[in-house]
Every structure is written in C-alpha cells, then in structure tokens.
Length: 148
Image (cartoon, rainbow, N blue to C red):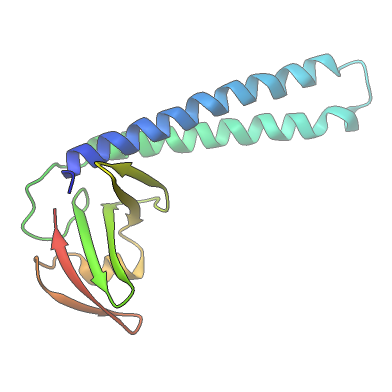
C-alpha cells in the first residue's frame, strides 16, 4: 500500500492536470466569445458562462492543492486528516485519503485505487481518532480500520 505522502502527491498531480485542461478549455471559450462579439449576445452567452465555470473550477482545485500540500505526513497512530486508511466491510476493501474538505476524486498509486474522503463524510466522522484494527459501525455497516 502506498504511503500517505505518495497518495497526496498523486492527488496534487491529478488536480494540476485538471487545472491545466480547464485553463485550455477556458481559453477556447473566451476566444469563442471574442469571435462572436459582432453577433447577438445570446449567441455567445453560453461561452461566457462556460469560461466562468472553468475559472471557478480552477480556483477550487488550486485551493484543494494548497490543502493537500498542508496535510501532515505519517506515520499515524490514529485516523486523522492526511492519513490513508483501508476500510474493510462485507462489500470488500477500499482505500481512502482523509482530507479536511472536498473528496470524491480518485487516483491509482502502486496499482491501488485511493479515494479522497472528506472528514465531514459520515464514515470519516465515525473513524476519526480510531486506531488500526478497531471496528466501527456507520450507517448500518461495520468497518475495520487499517491505517497506512
């Protein structure tokens, strides 16, 4: 299993790739607006909205990158933001990076899929502060915690 530092670096790299792609798309949308300035406003309004959406996404990802870089690396004795946990339940095994905000995005590190989980998520709330091997009940499911 990869270390929390490896996982954080993979998430930062993935977010940076998204930012780069959105910047390119924003330029294309902005150029479409400029090319349509002589036409009716309704014809280029969607491009303006699209460019604004890309700018918002870029800002959000830049905040996420700053947050990821600020996380403390391991080793961890208890579940805390910045640690990678493996949760096992009746459905199988899943790996998560616990983060203060955001969540949902995934990366593959050392052939292991890891999902960002916000510490506001119910499962994260249930496992915060737990130690390796503890069983936790959340939403009717039992989880066994393994800290990486």
